Length: 391
View 1 (tube, rainbow, N blue to C red):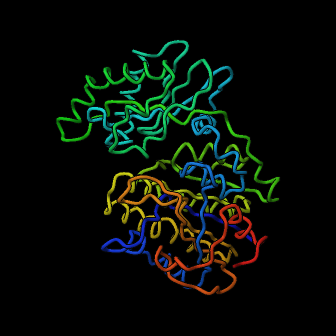
View 2: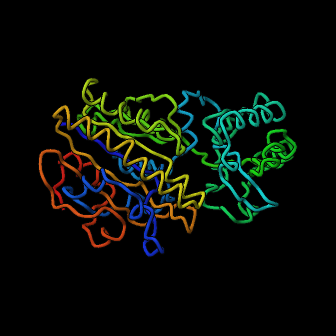
View 3: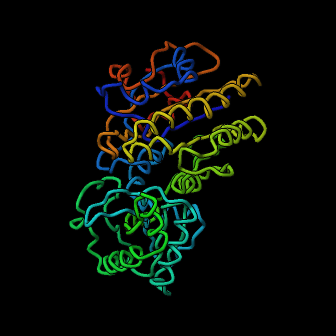
């Protein structure tokens, strides 16, 4: 028996919008087919006291204790890059867009990898020293590694969109110095001059956040008895996978955008299960969440449709063609409502498909699962693995 989890990050929204939610509006023939013979329900993957976000949700979903959800996100991302943090601390360093003191984009207005690399190189040249290192991660995502005490930094930037960030600057004097110095450097950089000339937002600031100690994570195989793997396009997912002892399935050109290698993720998961001998694979897609932060209905609908037609459809099709018995859990990790452009801890819909049987079936969206059975987030993995009865 094979087990899969497919997460469409942030694809859930708030019901009651004029055209329904993006999930209900999107054309999703594969999800519709699966839902017609699946168990449908609700869950919340954010433990009490944890900020709503992918770190808390994905760790809960994969069987980690609630305490790990409060660990350092940047440390997990450093783990993904095999960065030695001995005697040093690390923070996430987003390249962001600022208008005056207002944060208008958490991702620098949609930077390319080349643009981000050039901006980070400039920061490293001007501000880097033996105690401060700027490291590229993926696009607007970067890391600051520094000598000194562990510090949480500022709150997550995607929760501050549209706000005056002055009250949220970190209390640490060194981090504040870097924030103001970086702004002067980035404002004048040729990359941002070109972006302004083409009508794009400049990436004219940094946001330092996500600091903390690396959380202690349980070994997935020791907990479940299963050999597991994971694939995705963002450093956090890779760091979580490594921390849990999951085999990382590297996919060329996989990233956190709408243009990620959807089919490559599908094939990597299929190949690992059928030919690679793994029992479990976790597949993550970031694009719906990024569209939610951008407040873009067209992009969020497109991301959900790509998730359905370019990831789920080929993956389930190949498994069915080979006669593989499998259970598939599909869900978002949290909502990222278009109206808020930020994460919430509201319940999310899930579907559980079992290739061996026909379950009650239903329609998979926020409205039609509003009265569906609720399963706690920390029980979802056991539900998938048949160690908890269906509700």
